[in-house]
Image (cartoon, rainbow, N blue to C red; front, side, top):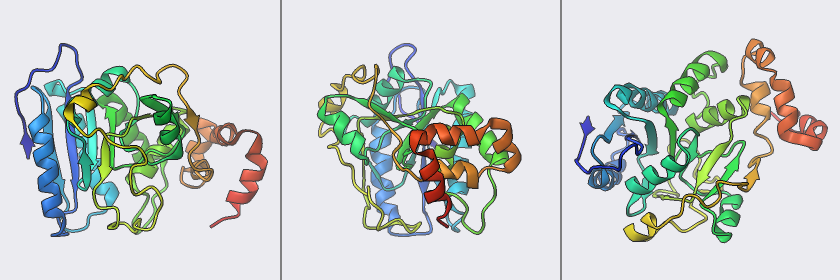
Length: 286
């Protein structure tokens, strides 16, 4: 299902394909999805599109997420420049669509995360910055890629990662591995979404940290539109969010790809001076 509304964006502004991952097998998610659809639909600009990828049979997170990315990529012929993938329990702020458009206009060629659940997000917010960056730590509640990078990500993930059964790797873990392997920083925008169902997880994450935004999302449309997306573009705060993340490059990437891309060296770069200790510590963990 593709939904459109007419609201003319400024010339050369990003044109957005919003794709929602919907757990349709869970009846409790229906009203949550309805609220999200209404919020997104009310803000769509001319040329923006909205799609709901409905999982009725528990196809798996990656199956649904990759379908969302592929759908978004398929909209490039219509002038779409960026794909924005949301979980169905995301709660966007007022003015969300135009805030996302403005953020992606400021950082049009990068992976962008719009959910702020890490300590560095809090530090950046306290400094009045709209951005910070990381090697890992993108959370799939709401994130975006330009269509060309989305294609690169899917092509690489389909051929470079080891297949794990039965569930396989989550969608955001795959995206973080791709970003680290290609030394492509993730840009974290000031939080524009809240996690609407933090006590409920369909993939076993209910007790994980970071189930709520650490920074306040804009409370009004005016507040969202007033964000200065130039703040933090120069010398943003940067972090390796989770010390364990680089080990995924050694455990989840096919050996021949790991060798061709020099990922052993990348892992050492990510860990820096602590690489020997990190290899010993994380390498010994199951």
